[in-house]
Length: 124
Image 1 (cartoon, rainbow, N blue to C red):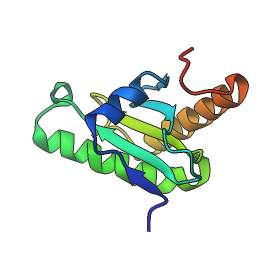
Image 2: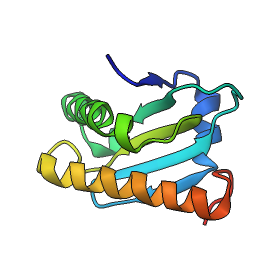
Image 3: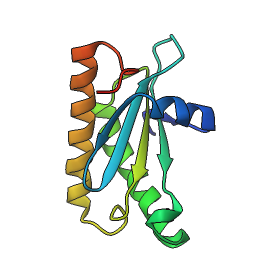
Image 4: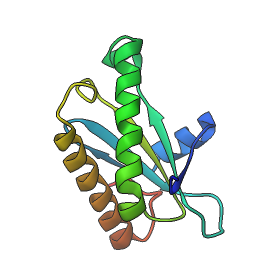
């Protein structure tokens, strides 16, 4: 059972893109506060563009991003926040240990920025 829901609408992806953004060597992580005021699970969207390769490569990258979210979001993601994980050119081929390190770094950095600024709708 997952502890997050999935973003489906393009408008949600665009709203999250205006929030906090952390770029690592293997992924890009974006976050914004959810529009829903109730205490709910975090929401995650996954994006892989044609720039990273053919469909086989994009699908593998998306599978790896979903596996990372299942492993790290229960512990590191903040409730009432929406996240978007964006695959980069090496997401499908790099070592999974590097992906784990990058997502953990990204989630901790976003948490620190949110606690420092009090809002995820301001980009630093």
